[in-house]
Length: 445
Image 1 (cartoon, rainbow, N blue to C red):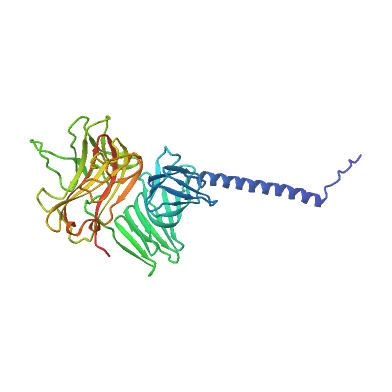
Image 2: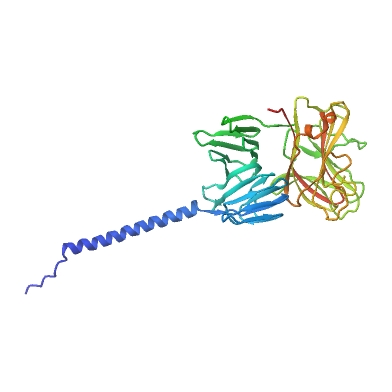
């Protein structure tokens, strides 16, 4: 007996089934590919927004947010978003600090906005995972004014992109300190330490600027000119163990200073004594001047940089027509109001001993303080000072630039040679950190 034949599947139905199977397999492969690509992107290319804190060193800071709302602060503020414009006025200095993960983690970079400065903080991102080949990236745009960028040694993978004008961009790709100004007709970049590039929109090559170089670009001729930056008469800008030491003395306790480095000592008569030390503070090598213990007597802790033996001419400077001081410091604490009853006990004082053009010995003083009562009767200038002392906020870094001392001093008291430079803390209790100090000389261009 013959078996009944099963009905065969029509060719059209077979093709339809195979089409469904192949399409499903194709979708499966696409989904696998997308999943793998997405996972690879997440692991190796995804980023997160860096925590940002804005601290006011002096004066106030203004913010304009993406929705055009505005805010002003006198102390500090955390920023949760990019696309924020940061503005300082004629009396202010502000630090924008970028952290690795949160405000207790290491600093990735710091932007110090000087007076009358504004820029748009476009974005600040970092790779989500440590094995990523992405860089930490900070993008600033629409910059006008003057600011300083500090990238600590630990931030080996941080890149700054700074769009100065629509047709020019600066990138900073190494740890160091950079001074940048854009004052309308002139762009000026000085690399105190580090490495930078300038890129013009219609040029294929990059202008490389290294440590000790200065790049200037004038709008009128659209040329970038490289030159040597201002000379530091102290040879080294950073305070560290290689150029700071305790002052040596002979067997009779007479000071025998080492020339060409900072010599430090404490001149406090009563206990507790003041202290000085080289320490790393907030990722900077610093000179610390400290006295504590709720003291109620005068103390003074100082460091001086001598240019020659006492009674000699020191460092002759006739070739310069610019002479100025630049320093970065932080007042952690002081107990006295302003600079004491005579205006001479500031937690940080700068003093330059020099011989003027008439052959006379002279001094230039300038002081800084953090504390002041509203009802204070203490003076804001000392009897020997040419300018009032400056108030800065406690627990914030501040960069001081004196300007040209030749213009600040009377014509008959202009320096002809420098004998020594001193930095010292004076008062009862004080705690000050100094990271950078330079005595700058230059010829006008």
